[in-house]
Length: 260
Ligand code: URA
Image 1 (cartoon, protein in one colour):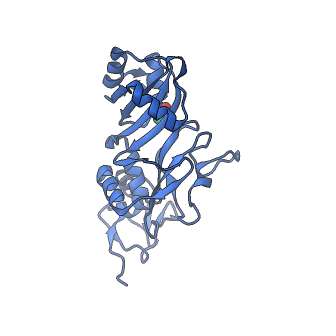
Image 2 (cartoon, rainbow, N blue to C red):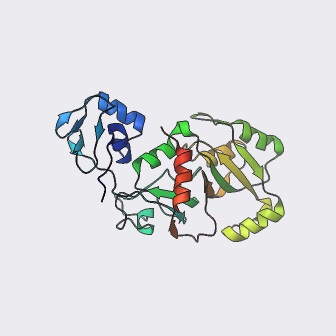
Image 3 (cartoon, helix red, strand yellow):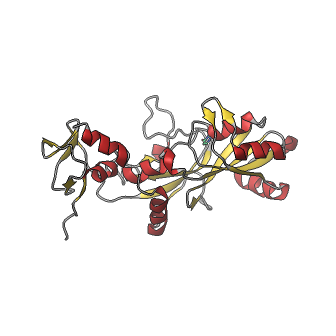
């Protein structure tokens, strides 16, 4: 068996899930990282996984032995956390957390939001995908009250002012009724009372962003579903089911996550 290759210290830390590579460089510069017991403050230092012992603030950190990524079709009324001190239902019970130690959700869906939730045990991949500078695309289907007008959709596309600042440009459209009926049937939604389905693609990940954007243009969200994230689409994965990503899918995600 070949021995693991030496890698730069900041990459090792990022892969271990400590923080993004850039933030790890700062931790190193701050003198908080040791290699084999000695403080290292040069980011160019290399370490050999499995041979060198790396610690942050005295606690040993290790990257997962093999990276894994999977998608879950998150059902409603489940929290996006691996541990809830109050004992509420979480996504942890729906993914193979014991089989793949260190698995964590990449980003968050509200308890009531359904759809594609990505998990990985690769800290670098996960942190890069949610990094605000990466502008990773996320597409949602939202069941809304009433029919948004074209000026309202244009406002969503250009950016609406929320209490935490204006949103970045987005893509959005109201689904034609025939398509909305098909989607509603698939998702178990009701179009009664003139409701419509809006498809919105955003590149940020602010708290309750889609709900707040649609409320800001006067069309409160009744149901929300994420159908794609970066190059991934949920496809016909049933609610509550997960599947491992294929190597090609992980490679595409990694390319999209780039090198932060
Ligand atoms: N935007 C929301 O409002 N909620 C989600 O769960 C995800 C995006």
